[in-house]
Length: 373
Ligand code: 3HC
Image (cartoon, rainbow, N blue to C red):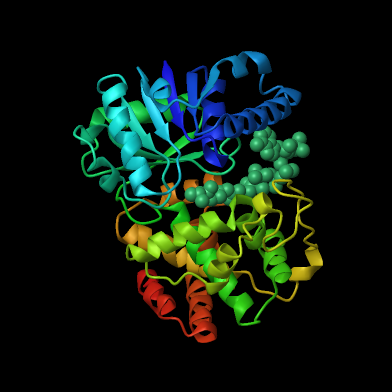
């Protein structure tokens, strides 16, 4: 089966890789040979790591299933499933979807990996709207087991079922997001965690290292909040949170994110973010000592995330078990965020959200509280 992956950046190259690992023939498109070469070299590095662990038996065989191309037409022609992972610009995506509708196999799935644009708006740009669906992967796609599956108002059952088969075949877990809300599930949780952490930084209530250490060592999150922002890209999160806010999400984007975006301090990819790295694109884990977080209560930043999880449940956007699965498989939490909140005690969660309201003076916290009643 021919899979077309449109865009070979951080997400695109990873999606192409996991599709090839699952046995699909993949055409991977991007604008220039240079971008494609860099994507292929990242794929090779990742496959070598998997080979060393016995996850992949034959690196060359997987590589041979991926055809990099700078021709969009070539990538799309006759494809039986497309995943678009291009920049988050509606006009760019619309152009790809229009071409895909014309060139791909009739009736095949046209998926977008968008994290910030409504699936329905993308579907609106083509005639066969029922073929469009959101398949939202997580960074790094090679390791994160979750895919959020988002239906537009038009998505047909056939498109949904074929997409679920595809996700299963990648050995990933699909969580169905029932409503096309800004940020879907995981980015709504992250928006609460990251903006709360950033607000405390701006208020000089806690330092970056204190917060990162406490969420890692007291809550068991796999990365600190600012470490994750750098890892996936401050630019990515800034644009996602801004798009969410523009579309009605009740939460401000912390000004520090905007400042760093303007200054091009994107994190690992530019060599400088909240932390510093040895060079552009060279990842070295930041040093976050365990003792640094002793005096900080990580529930101040995790409680708003629990509040958001309750928003998702009360608005029937996702079920409790799906939210918990999403936070474990999409964010690497040791337990689901709702379960963690329940174990900590919902009264305690509310108490921390009230404290965030006091510290920041922000209305979004009193808004969240009503969903925990
Ligand atoms: N391919 C293959 N193997 C890889 C790899 C890759 N791309 N990247 C890392 N690895 C391997 C490492 O070599 C290492 O192997 P080892 O155990 O043999 O040494 C192993 O994976 C673990 O890696 P690390 O030691 O570097 O680090 P961690 O133990 O912290 O694990 C992680 C890395 C899985 C990324 C973990 O830190 C994690 O789960 N972090 C959270 C990531 C997250 O939240 N992602 C979602 C972001 S939001 C998003 O994507 C949505 C978008 O819309 C914004």
